[in-house]
Length: 78
Image 1 (cartoon, helix red, strand yellow):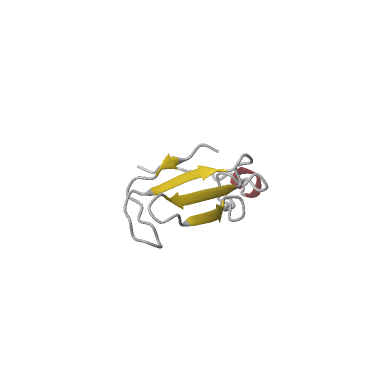
Image 2 (image 1 turned 120 degrees about the vertical axis):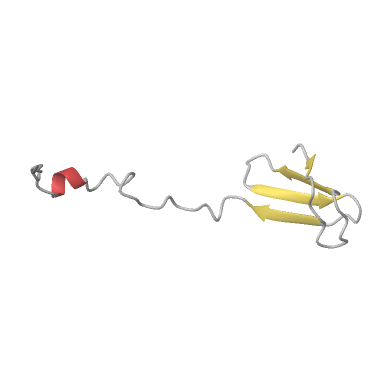
């Protein structure tokens, strides 16, 4: 696991700024944060709260407006 510094992050335990390292485990499912000042370690799961894509008329393949609605003829009157 290669750890990198996170810019602008404050340690929740000691309050030191720019002292947090972050890295993922080999599977990429757990993010580990570590403070180099006080030794605080935090494990965050990255795979549990993956949001689902919101269904819209663009990505909804079940129903197509062209199939459900009849064709309407438009007349331009001058």
